[in-house]
Image (cartoon, rainbow, N blue to C red):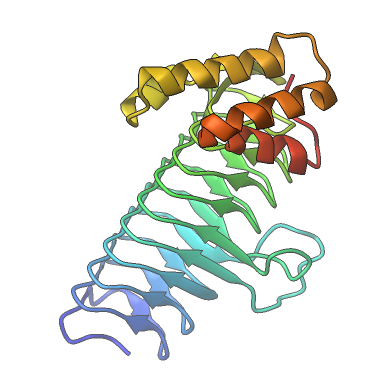
Length: 262
């Protein structure tokens, strides 16, 4: 079903069964298959491919050559009807690739709202991206990766499958992340190591000095005290009673499957 206000270029192919919302624009030579749903106000530019059981929300901008909902690269994938779900107001730049999920994990790849996915970013199967993130040029998010709200993964960085990148953290360019990155941490290198807090990002997002000092104290306890994680956790939990934002650090440490960067 195509809304009467949608503008579909004559050279675009939109299969029967696709749902195209009001004021959607579909550019030339774009291909959209039957189970795709696109919300109102979204702009799909030229030469885009959107396949599978893909749902895209409102007011997104999808640039040329992007591929969304294609079969994933997991050898276990057998053609199952897994999904891609994308929220609102995302910018998906040229040649970005977003692959559908697998039945062995979440069944879906999910991208929230207000994210920027830069040129040639690769979002693999079962990845979960929150809101307001920045995924840089040519960066790679391996299968089953989670990236929390307001995190940044800069150009040419690679995140190993099953890793968790915490909220407000920042991965410097050309980094290789093979373990979880706690919230608020600035990480860089191959393999990525912690280099303090992402103070610039925190200040830009409204964190005030008292809370920043508390987060710095938590960082020092985690990385500079010389204590084991078992010793540091009770101290961080006590700090979180006054500053709930510290709980984001605790959650990643306690739920980590691959361990945190050190």
